[in-house]
Image (tube, rainbow, N blue to C red; front, side, top):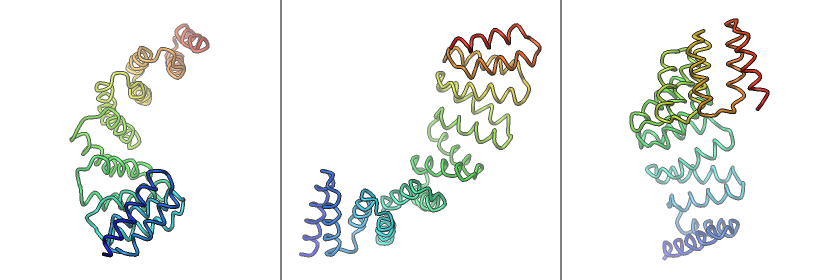
Length: 238
């Protein structure tokens, strides 16, 4: 009988939630919990309800309880991680995703979220490992681009170049990857390669002021004043 009443209140709470009546939904989930305190699903839905009401401390408490009730249920852990991210409590979010990854080591969404958080926290080597795991599952231009950025920050220029090139190959219209290549070549003082990359970027986005500015600077450094002026004039016409 208790479980039947718990389910009835849970179902009513779900209906209120679907109609955006969050206060009423929370009341029903709280009533459901009074009849079944060992339900991870009820604790999770109640935690989600508290989030919608911006009662974050209560939400965290319920989601932690849900994790304890059923450690195999990844929903409260994932929701808790997302909440921590929204609150900019990144170390706690990382801990939740790391726990989730132990349960599902190949889950792409968890791998990506954790890798992005590692980048935010400056754990670049750890982030690179997870991005490599992702592209081993399925190649993706954005992931290769992220790896290029990481390796640039680690001053591993050849690795960075490889991933920027692959990002551009996979997504030819991905102008940021081509621009990143140009900047990398400039840093390495490979100006001819930089010019080629920037000209390719212009073929993708012809009215890109950043490219004309970079080209103007390179031609100026090479002593080609006429070409530098031409690039800057093109910039002024945009």
